[in-house]
Amino acid sequence: MRIVLVGPPGAGKGTQAAFLAKNLSIPHISTGDLFRANISRQTELGKLAKSYMDAGNLVPDEVTIGMAKDRMEQSDAAGGFLLDGFPRNVSQAEALDEMLKDEGMKLDAVLDLEVPEDEVVKRIAGRRVCRKDSSHVFHVTYTPPKTEGVCDTCGGELYQRDDDSEETVRTRLEVYHTQTEPIIDYYKAQGLVVTISALGKVEDVTGRAMKALQRQEAPQ
Ligand code: AMP
Image 1 (cartoon, rainbow, N blue to C red):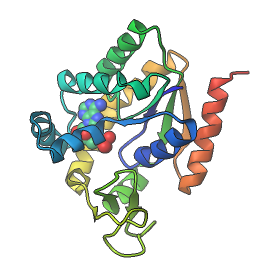
Image 2: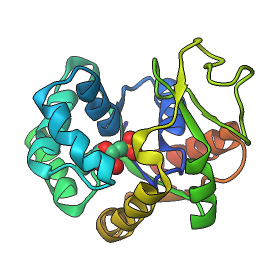
Image 3: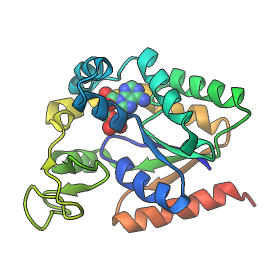
C-alpha cells in the first residue's frame, strides 16, 4: 500500500507510523526524521533545514521534494510506503501525484489523525524522544519512561526536540492549519481520506487505523 499520514504536530504520527509500517511490511518514510538525520550528520541540507525547523516553519519545497523523492526511489519502497510528514502543503501533494503518475502508481489512502488542539499542546509540551530511534516516544506525565531520561526500549537518551518549545509549537500549529490542512480537501476530492480519532491508547489508535485502512483497501 502507498499511504500518507496527516495530522497536527503531536497527533502521534511518528508513533503510529512505526506500528502501521511494521504491520503492513512497508517502510516508514518521515521527512522530519530525514531532516534530523541530516542535522546530526551536519550536512549542507541539515544546516539549511535546521533554521526553518527551529522556527517551526516548513523547509522550502525545492529541497524537501527532492529529498522525499530520493527516499521513495530506494528499492525497499518499490512495493509501497507510509509517508509521515510529507506532503505538507498542496504543491508537495501535486509533486507527489506527478512522481507517482510517472511510475504508473497511485496512493491508496490518506490517513487523517484527528486530535483536539488543547490535547496537542499538552502532548507536545511533555514529549520526550529517543536520540537513537525517534519512533521511541515518551511523555513525562502520560507515558513516562521507567528511568527518567532513558528510553525503556533501547536505553537511548531521551530529549526534548528543539522545535517542541511552546513558542515554536504555536507556529507549527499555525503552519499546519494554513498550509497542511488544505491537502485534506485536495485528497478528499480523490476519495482517499480516512479520518480517525487519535485519542486514547497507542494500541487502540493503531487498531482503529488498521481497520480504516483495510476498509479503504477493499471498498464495499
Ligand atoms: P516532523 O518530525 O514531521 O514534526 O517535522 C519536523 C519539522 O521538519 C517540521 O516542523 C518542518 O520544519 C520540517 N519538515 C518535515 N517534513 C516537511 C515537509 N514535508 N515540508 C517542509 N518541511 C518539513
